[in-house]
Every structure is written in C-alpha cells, then in structure tokens.
Image (tube, rainbow, N blue to C red; front, side, top):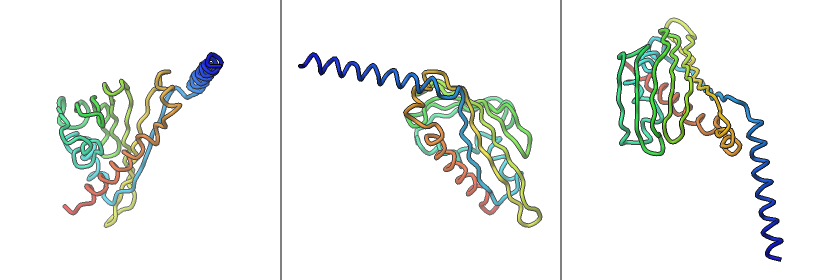
Amino acid sequence: MLKTVLLSLAGLLVIAIAVTLILAAMKPGSFQVQRSIAINAPPERVYPLIADFRAWGAWSPWEKKDPALKRSFSGAEAGVGARYAWVGDKNVGEGSMEIVEAKAPGRVGLKLDFIKPFEAHNDVVFSLQPHGQGATPSTNVVWTMTGPVPFFAKIIHVFMNMDAMVGGDFEAGLAAMKATAERPV
C-alpha cells in the first residue's frame, strides 16, 4: 500500500515537472513591461529627472526600498555615458545602468544589468511626448523595459508574471516623477 502511494506521488511529481517544462517552452523569448503617465510640465522640465542618475533619488521607486542602498556614479555627469551602480538588500539587489541614448528633451535609452538576485540584461527607454502649448504644457512619459527570457527564466515566468511584478514599481516611479516635475519652481 505504501509503495503504491509513493509510486503515485512520484508519478504526479514527474507529470508536474513535465507540464512545467512544456509550459516554460511555450513562453515567449522576450518580455516587455510598459507604463505611462501624463505630467503637467513641459518635456524640458521632465527630461533632466531621467537623464541625470543623481536626480533619480527624487522619484525612483527602488531608491526608497532600501535605506542603506550603496550607490556609485561614474562616466558622464548626465546623458550618454552616465553610469549608475547599486548594491542593496534583497528588495533591490545589485546591478548597474548606463545611458546609451539621450535625445533631449524627448528620449532616454538605458542599458540595465542586474547581477543579483538574478543576472539579467535589459533595455529601458523613456519616451517623452509633449502635449498642450502655452500656459498648460504637459508631457506624456512612457517607460518601457524589454529583455530576453532564457529558458530558466521561462520556468520562473510560468509561476510569476513579469508585468505584474515590475509594473507596480513603474507606476509608483512615474507617480513620484509627476509629483517632482509638477512642484512649483
């Protein structure tokens, strides 16, 4: 009787693993997370908040997750060639970013490399689109992150949704960016 139960459990485990691997194989080879917000400020006011890593402390959602976060800045002060690296707790991990594209005041592209908790190499783009003119200029900011999904990550994606996992942080960051950009000068 015990032998039959153990064999049944082993069979169920094999089936569960097989189903997980099949579902993982069916996952796409890349991901995209994207959020946007309308900010009541011109692009020229929003752009410096993104193109200068030293300004990220005012709005980045990850800056507030670990009060003991260790940061280092290198390369250019802002724009192409600016680099930012961090080492933090399990909430923020370890990694670095480099600005690889800066077209003021409309676009900033980043190379984002995570070291911990998992290695990942992603691309990030901030697109700033002006709306309105005169006394009521505004900017639509679109924050997009894309990256490859290797097979091991696909297994994780069977159980976790990348958009749900990171999307809330993007929303919080954009809301803080809006509050920062809309503050009276």
